[in-house]
Amino acid sequence: MKFKTKTYVLEKEIALDRKTAWQLLADNNRMNLYIGLFPVTFSPTKQDGTEIFYREAYAKALGLVPIMWQEFPFQWQKYDSYTVERRYLSGPLKQYSMQAELFDTADNGTRIKLTARFLPLNPIGYAGVLISGIPAVKKMMTYLNDYLQSGANKISEAPQKPSKGKINLPELDRMSALLAKSPVDEKFVELLHRYLAERDDRDVAQIEPVELAHHWGADLDETLRVLLYATKAGMLNLSWNVICPNCRVSKVEHNSLAQLEEQFHCDLCGVNYDADFDQFVELNFSVHEAVRTAYAEVYCIGGPTITPHVQAQQIIESGESKRFMIPQSEKALRFRVIQANDRVVVDTGVESNELVYSDLGWSHDSVSGASDVVVTNSSSADIVVALENANWTAQTVTAAKVTAMQEFRDLFSSEVLSPGQKIDIGHVTILFTDLKGSTMLYETVGDSSAYGQVRNHFEFLTGHIAGNSGSIVKTIGDAVMAVFHKPEDALRAALAIQENLAAFNQTAKEDIVLRLGLYSGAAIAVNSNDRLDYFGRTVNIAARIQGQGEGGDIVISRDVLDQPLSASLLTGADLELEEFSAVLKGIDGAVDLVRVRLREGLVVEEQVG
Image (cartoon, rainbow, N blue to C red; front, side, top):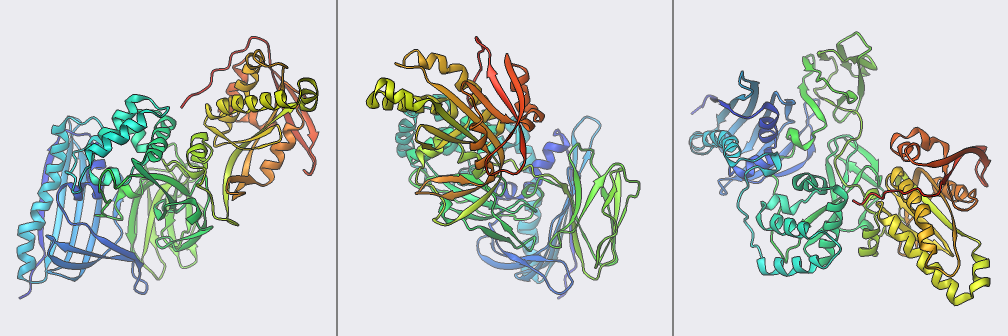
């Protein structure tokens, strides 16, 4: 018996704006979990000849019937529509597709149109469409209604599925009490307790610090500190995910930095990449199994919210043309052929709004940023084209950021790279300090007293460095090397150190004078004596710049004045700036520098969090 395709269309208006409705419907992982669909196991990408690539998916329908299918790339125009197609290799269906379309209504709501097409293979498949398939489509609308009726004000407050695992509340209470003894705000202890007890399995099995900070309405650094102390208390585990710089999806997870490899492979993009601390390695957390059993089961691997930087994505078969709508955006956009990784820049200064892709690549290097662009595939193979944000804007906590925090180094001193391993960092800021006249200090007050004062001055430096999201890498005699993720944090710390030094000296037998220097650039992270250390030209220049100090000053490179956030710290304060050039040992050519001195009476506010 041959069955025909059964099409089911469901339309409804809902009192949600289109962006919110999209964020709910396009997050297929969360939605499919909520409406009771089955988890899925996906293979790496596969391809048959010149046809489009796909992933093989394995699942059990209704938890009983084994099924396997080819899942092809989602197609979407952000906030407007998305489509996905499945071709079954086993089970009671032959084919399935789902299309969701969203339209504005006159009263600022959204009209949702869901179109599901089922092609049964046998009577069991036909019955399954009626028993499971169509009800699942209806539940998608129910999900939107439940969100609306819940009174949620943001997507992170969307309705949750009850936990499948056991929650050990007595242990959670005990660990929360332990966390409360840490230097964190008590309100965050309560927030984390509630989050781990009430959120669904996926949320607590994959805790992303940026999303959690947004959910709490809290500062990211403060949220991160709470998570680090909670990990030390045994409430959480931490892990390191390697992100592909093209599709920006996590490719591999490690429980320790020592497990990181210097290169990794993205099966979707088909390219090998070098691991990079400040872009491609991110920190995530998960609830500890002693507190709660939770697993981040996969329900979807290619939905639009998996790659939020992609504005539109379409399958274009050989000889076919597709139209892309260009969104109004201040961000740089580009077209990219998935897997081939050939790119074209969207440029408002270009007139042509037509692109042709052949076996030799794109017909142009740039295309118009007008309202729409027509892309023609004249190559011999089917392709997937994405319209995406060109610049890296991943909302993650990178390894470069967290390893520059003093709390991380204090709490997880054993968390280092494996011996001999080196990982690139595209941008980091190194600060060196030096105690001027330390030899005379030892001569004046004696070894014991001088050593005590030097140790106290290390504590003084640590407080201001940690208070501005930095950390001490090491001490070298009476000098300090510190690292910061952002240059403005390093400069803010340096200003605070020099401003507060007079108060520190009031408690010392002899006044100390500090020379500070900082520099930003690329570096290499390595394991040095079981400690995370940094090497490279940036480190060398920072040390040489500090050597240009005269005492009571901060020496920086001239280009800092061209960085808005750093420059604002210098122009908005009562400071004396002296520009000069110097030849630094081991560095070719003269380097333009700026000497910064604080006038008497200046107060620099430190940024906490």
